[in-house]
Image (tube, rainbow, N blue to C red; front, side, top):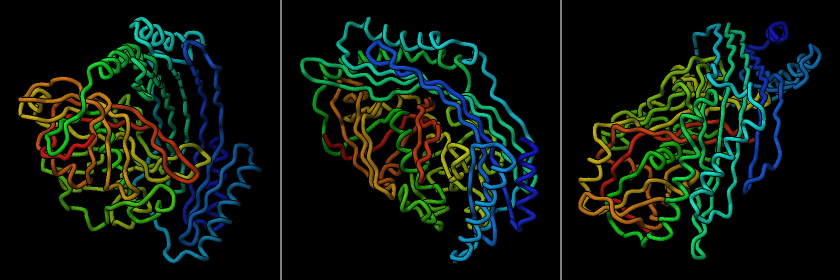
Length: 472
């Protein structure tokens, strides 16, 4: 592989490229779908290839191949050069990359309990454990869809500026979708995931089977005891699952620099944020939002991005102030700064674009109990079933799944589907207290054309929102 990559670098420079990078990736994995107690088959992933990106006359070209021979690699490079030269003829503004310090590095996430050493039958036992725990509740759960998934990614990234990053990253996921039926009414826990970077030791410590059992009991309780949600101006306490989706959708996405500069407008949407909003207040002074790919075990983990830049925590909001955007090298140059390593590609045949990794509401100074005890009348929203947000990431809506009335500082009976409809600025400006406790929830973030789904974590702290309009 080193010989093939060096061939790409040499030939690209000989052809007049200002910059060239090659990204090799091999992905292997297993997926086991499990529906109502029956395995529906086994999905095997085995994909390998190389993507090549060049910069010629201020324009980029990208091509890939899954045939790892000198001839095929050379043909892919020729195609990338051709596309860049064609693009250069019509581009108004030349693309430039930020200056970065590159390294030669190798890292591997070690699995304490490796899925490589286990049979399909042994992996299926994790799903059967969920199935048994759910059935043992005696609750009517007519739809039980479970998935086990594992991936092992080996990547090598190199560029003509001296970068050489060799990484091996395993990821494991267990997901369930459960529907409870009670007296002709249904409630659903849709696509709840337990997902990590690492081995099966993380799954066993997280115990998704215990969470599935708890979710089923909660859904039944909501159906039996849930009362209509109060409406009007109230105080609301949101749990990390809700604060997590809110920071992901209303902070992470609009702070992606390609959205800010319009590249994503026709694909994934626009942003209400403009470049001159750096330093502007967007929330109260207790709001801090962090984006950090380097958290060990996190689903969105990486130490170097797909442009070879070393990763670090990104502080998107500090004390309620917009502090930095997510950038790759192209947009970092435009902003006059360095890349903060937010370039990610789903596979070797996808171009790296600006992406999130692990986005969370940073912890504050209060306990969860303190958030609740200072609410005279309000609602605690622990989880959600639905979210919506406009293309500019400003107008949004969240519908609670598990939620409870708060009266005089105490959590009371369940309430059914409370709805928050609010703007991004109003949401974060209304936060007056944030908890010390943090929790994380995994997801797959989709973006790009063709679509790229990348693993992420969302979550963080509990937050109290004052004087929010609640609907039902």
